[in-house]
Structure formats: C-alpha cells, structure tokens
Length: 203
Image (cartoon, rainbow, N blue to C red; front, side, top):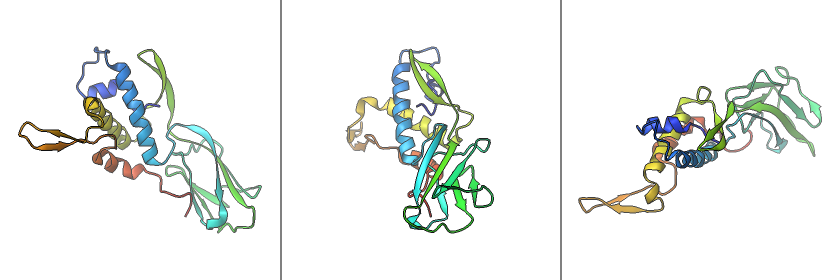
C-alpha cells in the first residue's frame, strides 16, 4: 500500500517527472515507509469492511476501532452477547475518531462479547509503478499530516539508502555525525502523533 504517489515524492525531492529510472525503487521505499507508518499509527488505513471483537471484562464504555474514519453511509452493526444494539439509543458513533461509545455501562457475564462490524479507512485505488500494480490511497482523503510525514520519511530513506544500517559518519571537519538507521524520524513521529489510535481497545 502506498500512502503517497511516486510523482509526489519526486516533486518533494525536486526530481524531474520525466526521469523514471528510479520509479521502481521509489515505489518500494514508499511501500516500506507506508507500512512502518501504519504500524506506528496502530490502525489500518485502507478502506475495508471489518469485524472486531472486544471483551467486556474491562467494563469500558468507549471502544476504539482499528480503522477509521468510519463510513457513515454504510451500515455499522454493534452486537452485545448476540443482541444487536440500536445506534443513537444504545450506543453512539464518533465517525472521524473511530469510537463506539455505549449509552450505558455494558456488564460482563460469561461469555459476553461486543462484536462490531463497520466500513472504515481511507479510499484506495490501484495504480501501476514501473509495471507493478500497487494499492494507493487517494491523496485528497488522506490527512495532510500523514501525507507530509510519508513524503518526508520516504525522501529521507531514498537519499540515505546507501548508508542504511550505518550508525555514524565522519563529517568533513572530522567530527562524527549520527544517522537514523531504520526508525521513523523524530519529526515524522511528531507529525503522526495526533493521528495515532490509543493503545488498548476500550476505556
């Protein structure tokens, strides 16, 4: 999955759009970076129908889904112990934040579970990069912060790909400089924090 396009990364790096010699490599880097960002965000970004099961033992009222925004035009089904709950009566949905909040405190009686079915995530389409078909998110639906973070990290990896794994380099003045050898850049993490799903399934 690509969070940004090859052409967007080339523009960001001020590379000519007519130079396609490194398109396959750039595509691979974007795919790698996109996967790392998705893991950091603790959520699935591509839009799909999903089912998630929560244990009521923790006695929480808010349940965080692992893919959002939730599509408000599609059906969302919340089932508690085989009973289908009613939206805006038994529970409420925070569509942009991916939260289902119960109007009451669900109680745990073995083996009660909450099962939620929904459509969530950002719209995708198929694209071809250097002859290889890949899935890409529509740029217009992805938040600017996630998009910029992906551009920043992808361009960094591309420009420093020959030094990956190197912990430090000797600068022209003789001093040692450090290199990030695989982790997301601190600035990238700061950009992504506001889009990150909280750890844990409910509160």
